[in-house]
Amino acid sequence: MQEIIKQYFEEFTTMSEASHTAVLKIAEREGIQMDRIILATSFCFDELNHHQAKMKLPSEQGTFIMGGLAGYPFVGEIGLNAFADHIPDGGAALFIFGSHIGISSSGEVGKIKRVGQHRHTNTCGALMKVQEHVLSSSIHKIDPVDYSGFQAEFLALRLFPMAKEIRNAEVPILKTTHLVYDEIENEILKLIINNEVLQADFPVYILGGIVINTDGTMPNYFSQKVFRKVR
View (spheres, rainbow, N blue to C red):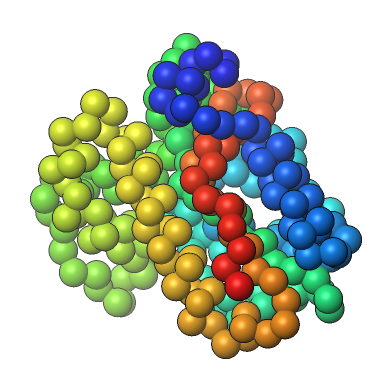
């Protein structure tokens, strides 16, 4: 499986290793116990990104979920304020985030075989629909009354300026996945930097990258793009 992933990502590790390494580094740098570090995640709501056996995130108490469609942090400022109230005294916060894409054992990008299925299905299927919308050039204004399509339409509007770049890519959905990652990181940083509650006396770190979903019970992998202290 790793040889197949290497065709599309130069560097990656399991999601478990990436997240545990980040938490261990924070604990060592800040001189605190690992269990004093609370996690917030901004991943797509796809079950593959919240399956403990595939993710194995270092958080026995669970994680605060910020991500909506494609992993964009749609909880916004209100959600971030709620999370800030959950940080342990003398502890730290780690935001783990990113877009995701499937790579099957046969090397097909954007497809995996989920447990209990005999067929391969799309991932991120939602982002593929957004990409289809972007490339159709039929973007329209979001109707605030019809909230059901809000998240998809919001992402489509963000990606529309990059439509030509996506269309000309060797693997369009892979390009779209990276472009959405950039949108997620920018929004996460903006939310953190502009949040007064998070300017209190505890450290805040970010760990961002692409989650690589795999077939069945195999682990999710992670191609890291950023790990640093924000404040």
